Every structure is written in structure tokens, then in C-alpha cells.
Length: 88
Image (cartoon, rainbow, N blue to C red; front, side, top):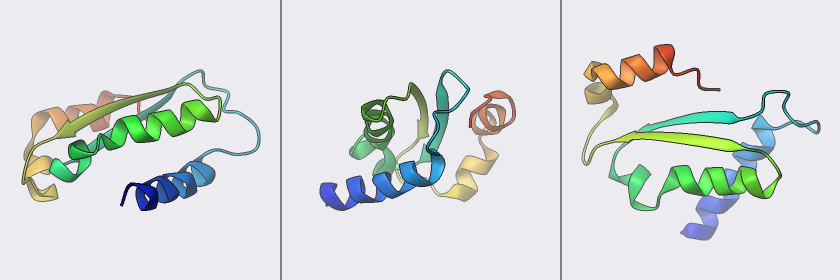
């Protein structure tokens, strides 16, 4: 399972990062999810992948057990982070 996730992250990283490093000093990524997001520490897995490629990466996770997107949409912290968090 972890290998499949890492392969997926690899593909995501390749799609986000071009051959030239980003001009911005830090890549900021917001993770919104549930226990599937935090159980395997998905944000850290993604950040580690970017760091291994030489990029500075900062992740933020907003996750609650058994939550659906419908619940996150109503959460003020989620809306605030999407609107003002300056994530990439």
C-alpha cells in the first residue's frame, strides 16, 4: 500500500514541478481530509518527496476522522485557509 501511495505522490510531484525549480522559496500545500489523510501522514510523505527533490515544502493538514467533503465545506477553518492561506 505504501509503495502505491509513494508512486502516486511521485506522479503528482512530477506534474507540479517543472524542470526548473520554482521561483517561490517555499511550496505551500493544504491537505483537507479525514483519517485516510492523517493515518499514514500523507502531508509529511508529500513534503518529504519534494524535499528529496531539493524543494522546500510546507504542508498544513485539516483532517477529522470520518469527515466528508460536505462537512469540511461548512468548517470555518477550512474556508479561511483556502481563502487566505496562500497555498500553491
